[in-house]
Length: 272
Image (cartoon, rainbow, N blue to C red; front, side):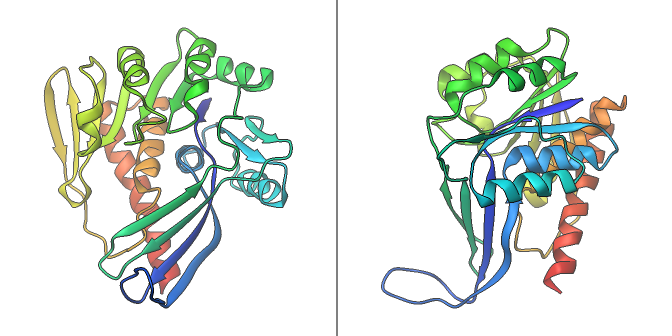
């Protein structure tokens, strides 16, 4: 079973018809209102599409949005024992706006920052995982997540350039214990020296896989889709699912590209 830890999010996505700025009104088209977001949801869903058990571990409010997110995750076939609702808190929300040139602005409200802690059931779930992925999430729980991990569980780190979630100390601890690291080209600079497999996504430039200092570059097909949120996480989920089924890292990366393309194809159909 795969467990993926990190922040939850309900995404509100808009395509802008012109540039945005202060003291002006810009027309927009809503494309998802809301949509299940957050790294754990994307990673776990991509893995579950390969018929593997996957459980996002994250925190939401005890509000209608939190109830809706849990029901949607269940509809996707995901295990929801790790989704904890915090009493009196609002659920995390992100507003993503895309300019005509493709640039994205993301405004994120974490809902209950600092109130996220591992419950006994979440610790048990982590301990049962054969594969564990840590994505961007509350920094105060990272040490407990690593402590609850089964000794033989394969560990993945989905890096994000978030200095609050991934402090230098946390980055050092993850680099020392992780088996596979996912990052993009900009985030690679924040990954300390490591013996882990490093999978670096480069947008249209492809995917680089570094194993023991040897690099392999895989190509990707271009896409006209403007909404790229969750693409790297879907890649990571496809990669992990393939490794869980016995694939080599290169084979797993190809599976990750397929998972990302599946998400892009769905969004391109929706935009039509």
